[in-house]
Length: 150
Image (cartoon, rainbow, N blue to C red; front, side, top):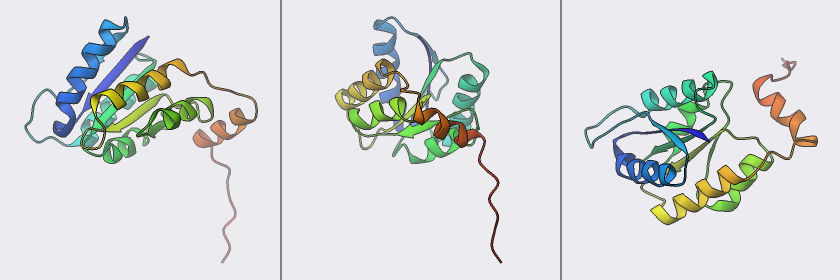
């Protein structure tokens, strides 16, 4: 699978370990940065990752920052991306099965390497269930027009 991975400075060490692990597992990995501890802005890397997934150059994405929150918000600004912030494998599995998530976000300050690997494994090995979930997922990119009351 073609996987893009990106992080801010708080998660660059975890990113490097995960990229190496994913490559060893046979995946094609595009490391979109950052590559050191110098402070950077997580939205820059979230947008870069979102573009890789939205353009099709990556099938899935792994987004990392200190908490996972900021980078997940930036990835989700792209309407093609469905980024799920997870902290354990069941959430990662359900994000694929029910939400057809194409990006997973993890917080390096909150998630250890073994748990991160377990989450990513669940994310990469779970298929989208479709059926009733497909209608809901479609609404994520095409929200209905709601009437507002005055």
